[in-house]
Image 1 (tube, one colour):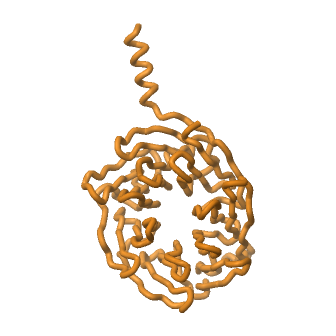
Image 2 (tube, rainbow, N blue to C red):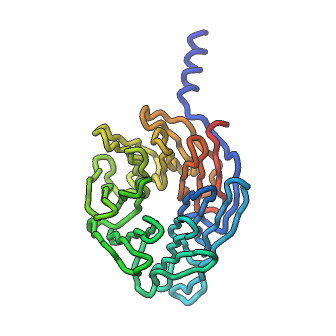
Length: 316
């Protein structure tokens, strides 16, 4: 009897703990990208807007609107905002333009300036600040560019490979960018020289949807239903095989924990990066997971194709 009780306790202790959201809030539309800057969340939506949520007051601060567009049948539709970033008083917005082009805007002091127009027919997939005067952006053709906002010109560019682009993330010091694509390779690039520093390709065998980098550790989540972990200072890379496409993932600040989209129920799995132990399953996410963000060591934001955004607390 004692053995049975012990085994039951052991099995339960090995199972990941299920958590419900500690709080939720609504945004204008499905979320494509999230960034935290100071005490605000900036959420790029599919409804022609960037919504700004105050983490202190737990209230929506404001929405930055971009113009709606005409589709190929001349119907007026919402512009999808693909990515967002913030620095000082400036907000960087990459949005869908007409005829398949993309617009890059800078919003500052209530004014929206079109930096790169969709008329240029550049198929820009992702864009972030390097500093207040420079941005980095990537094309679907897997080319990356450094653009000077003051001089209004491209400073440097690199064609990484002939595999189509998926995603990139920057190191915290902004010295390196890690680029993922359809080949499954993660490419580390110096943001000043655009020189390729390293490649990581042992674990993923298909398109990597999202890549994150913290504390010399890389997380790559992919179409091959794998969540891969690479260590810059070690060759002990590994991957976790999942029963569903791993659309999104994130690391906490010291890379001790990883969060990944987990299954067709839109759950999110939290696992220990070192031991690979599955610790938490985050429930009640409304739709396909698009973005995951650690606010700190125990609070996690989960967004999806739905208007509802969940915040989970691992201490609860």
